Image (cartoon, rainbow, N blue to C red; front, side, top):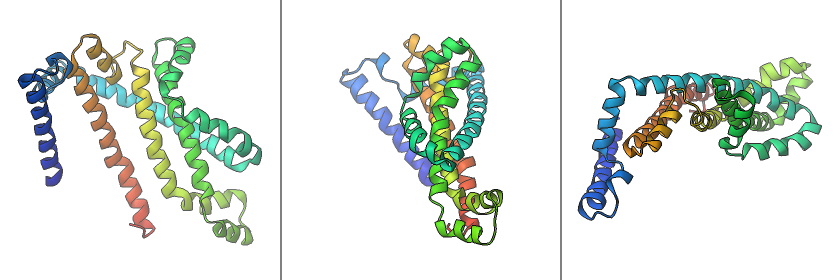
Length: 252
């Protein structure tokens, strides 16, 4: 913890040093084009005092969780179908892999046309931006289960339901959690792409407002909040679950 604090202090010092040299001293960069630590801190205090930052963060978290939950359900179902049916494995999986590479912003025009400038449009972008990644992760996790496990279970008379419940799911759980974590990162990133098109308060909308006002400090502040929330979710939820699963299996 102390090491992290020291690193952050050094990082902020380097940031301030860059600003002082290239903006104040050499005047290579214009003040309005480079954020400063002091300016970002001042903007943070302003947005906290009027409640904008907390409201934007809360709204984005609620949308992100809702969209991610829907993406997990869709991704798991799609992944199981791809894994179970050879026809889908050969024909649908390459398409899913291709769709997975699309930037989330590609879904924005469709979401506006189908849902208008609404929360549903944002959730659609989140789901489409992360569900296919989760589906691929589910398929790969099941594929990587040692064949001897399934053969032994089938030899002992396990049915399909028992096979998935008692063998495949427990054996693939560590890799599934990694896939869910990756899916969250895709969902959080897609959420920002979806929020930039709306007028409802959210981190993405606050980011675009800063851009429109040429307020580089606000833009930088929102970027830092987006990164911070992503790190907190990873460390406090996914990493905790992952470590518990690995410890339970004697792998950590």
